[in-house]
Length: 300
Ligand code: HMG
Ligand code: MG
Image (cartoon, rainbow, N blue to C red; front, side, top):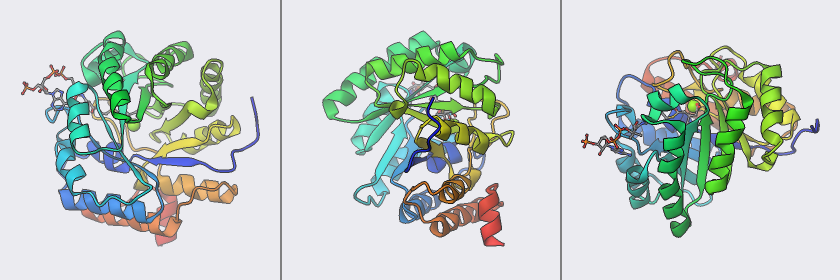
């Protein structure tokens, strides 16, 4: 594996979706729109803004249609959303989402708990979404959850991750994001999993998505960078978690990732002060403080 770092990194900001989906209190639409505007102002070019899932399963995302209608779109920014089935895709398309993401898992039990079907059924369910997206010229991203451990099954074999990722790419996803949903990955384990996936999938098509439950995310991201992976998912202020992954806490904070990359001379195009401001505004709306160490240091 290569040990040279990428010169630039694409950050996929998942705060408005992954970050907010797990919040218990319903957040008003104005605060969500403000967050997206603030992130755009900070230079984020890929913003996962919502989720067209069942409102019974994730009430917090029930206003995604309204959100996309009211969004101020800045040219050059991709505003994306999750779509678990054709119904979600059709709804997303009707409000001109720029890109959609389908989400599967490397764990059977998590797949059942999260999207109410087996891994094989989920792949079947994704096919018509991708077929329609191709006709619409809509880019599709794929997620694989539980790549370094499952809240229900424990360890997950890298072979399983590779298998699901291959399915997603073969059906037409342009990239797969490998999710450490409950943040249990540690660097050597991460390294082995990423090496196994790269046996069959080129690194240009791999993104990493670390939750920071156990404080391992930045260390794991460093491993991914050392392997030449240059797309990183993160959420401003360290927001996030999946309601169907017991114990899952926030994503790695975008501020912390950008600070690390800045220190390594890796270009992101993000203004860290404006990013901290984005985090500060949403945390004020939520009535608690950020879990980003960098944001807290810069604000103190
Ligand atoms: P189901 O109950 O099996 O679906 O849920 P169904 O097809 O039987 O439909 C049941 C009802 O839901 C029907 O309504 C449908 O119309 C409605 P009813 O007739 O009862 O009134 N429905 C929908 N409504 C709106 N939009 C839709 C939709 N689909 C059905 N798209 C389903 C299956 C997949 C829908 C459900 O399990 C679901 O919505 N799951 C989403 C769970 C979720 O969003 N989890 C968090 C995101 S994943 C994540 O966070 C991990 C990630 O960050 C990576 C990582 O960290 O690893 C991506
Ligand atoms: Mg996630």
